[in-house]
Image 1 (cartoon, chains in turn yellow, brown):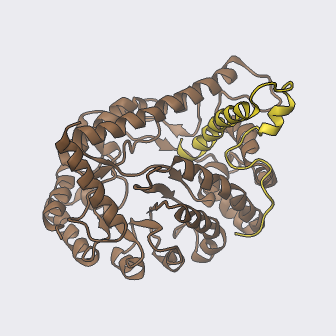
Image 2 (cartoon, chains in turn yellow, purple):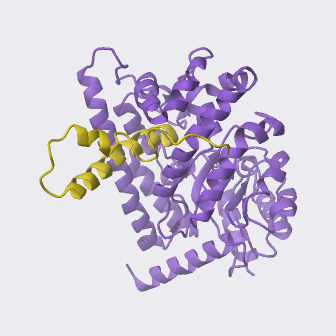
Length: 56
Length: 398
């Protein structure tokens, strides 16, 4: 496969954590916890669209 | 789960995985890919198994138990039409709705000129496949989804909730199904995970076959770029949906890469590079791929032979399985090679003779799994599948 630019939206991601973070107030608690849960639920949407395309 | 049944399961899993490592198990594994056949056998209509996945699951379990197979797909009538109707997907003819209840669901390519992806949208897809799929493709294929910039609606808002929750409910059902196959009949769930070639995604769901044929001549660099843009995503989905234990392979469903749909030079330029990369990456991660090569793929064998040893289980449909064995049998386990029309229209003697011929020709050193050439729908005769099963169980002992 030829050289290509890094995808703007990498595999597994719909709305990157960095975008979500911009819309949040200052996280006073565990930032990693918020990030992990955001990415896990975001990945569900990613799976949804790719399964619509692949499997349905 | 009884100890005996668990022992049977482990024996079958060992048999299946040994063959997939291209080694010699105790006997040839029997792994029929049965779709609407299960409905006929269990006494359901095509509509029932397409629209009620619990009936589809029950039909698969009944077949697994009665035929005593080593492995089956948990539900080969995979498209749950309950989900497609939940979001009003417009590219299926549903049994009992658009087509008779006793006919399997049909995928309908859009008319030429109305492809779900327009000819001038390659750059959009390449720039951001996820954004394109959600914002452009989904509204075109799902009537309830409002296009970007158009007024939203209750149906639009509901479609995402219903579609997402329906999908989660359905996929959760597979976990229970696999556990029941194991506990009730000691049957292995044959595959885990899903993969398609980037080229097939474009052909099947985006540009349509005709549109893509024109694109290969009019804008070939765009077709290549689109395949390359989607490949990392398809790799990712295949990986995260794969068997975490790396025992059973990822299902790769191959459609338009064979003759006569595209020529070998077109295969080499458009179809192969990204698919090869994906398979190599999955192999590097320890996953095998079931290379379900529907149609005639033998003209492309020299490319397929480039894949790492044991990276695929090569399923043979229309190709001469003996030629396949000669070319790549030393590298990959093979499956299939029993023609579907024989199973539908032949005699049990014919079926047994064919099975013997294939076993004698390609299974001597192991590395062969008994199955029909293609997914069995409701035209397969029960007695012929029984003959294939029983003959293999007796004759396929090492």
